[in-house]
Amino acid sequence: MRKVVRGFLMLGFCLIVAPRPTAAQEVVYTVPGVVNDGALGTFFTCSAFDDQSVTVTVFNATGNAAGTATLSVSANTSVTIGTTSADGISPDANTDSPDANTDSPTIAKGYGQVSSTSPKLICSAMVADLSSAPPVSLTSLPVQKRTSSEGN
Image 1 (cartoon, rainbow, N blue to C red):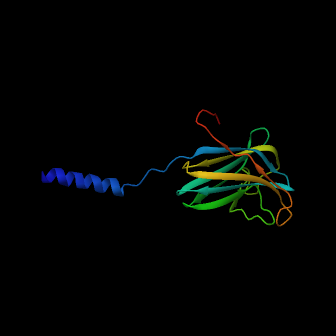
Image 2: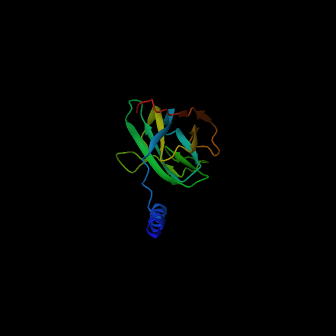
């Protein structure tokens, strides 16, 4: 009996201290209408309800990746990721070009994807003018929840 109890205690201890495997990111949201053209930029704001890694990837009109940014987000906090910096809007990160450590290149008629290690995330997206603080022109973009039946 002692061996059985000791075995269960050891198993319980191993289960408690064993590290959790790192979760892979999955696309949670898709956002059409991404723009980055020198006068306008796109900004994604996400709030997490548990600790997670959030990645925003933006694509140009031909579907090629134009930039990406990844942040670790603590539970009950929000972050903003932009295609560039703007007067009056301070993103926590910018989507860097895949070719160089610079802001995303010009994007017209693009789209974005928000990926995360957890589905406990809500996001919004907007296009704003870059030269006014606060922005003189600003519009929200539709944020579409990704379903498992959709492709990449």
